Length: 133
Image 1: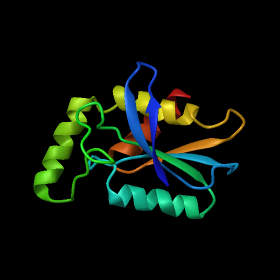
Image 2: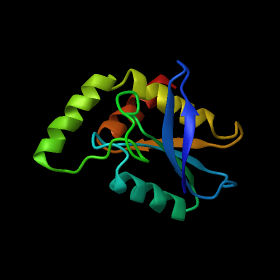
Image 3: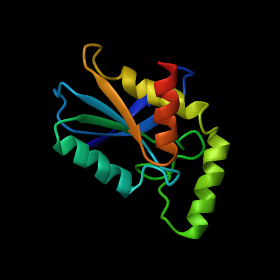
Image 4: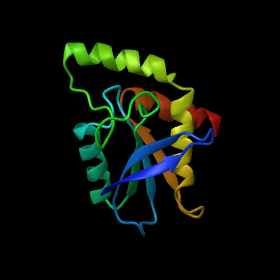
């Protein structure tokens, strides 16, 4: 598992948690909750990787702040729920995060099928992306 730097179509550089067998024939992009690329999301990615997927999860709040190895990591406290909602509004819910998810998809080899799933905000992003493809 590592933190891979990626570049969105608009030139924004962001980090992504990457795990699973590099040579896997199956790719998966995991969209984060409003709590950032926290341990819960990374553990979920590790679970998909244990099933044989190559997994990438973008740090969707990197456009706002880039502290720490994984960017913003919030807890599930009432205070952090409000902070997460504010951050999601600031990043533009579906505007910029879709660019990051697309960059993750593009980082896989062209012949590899890639799925997109997500939790909370990431689930909405996966749905929006599915309607656009």
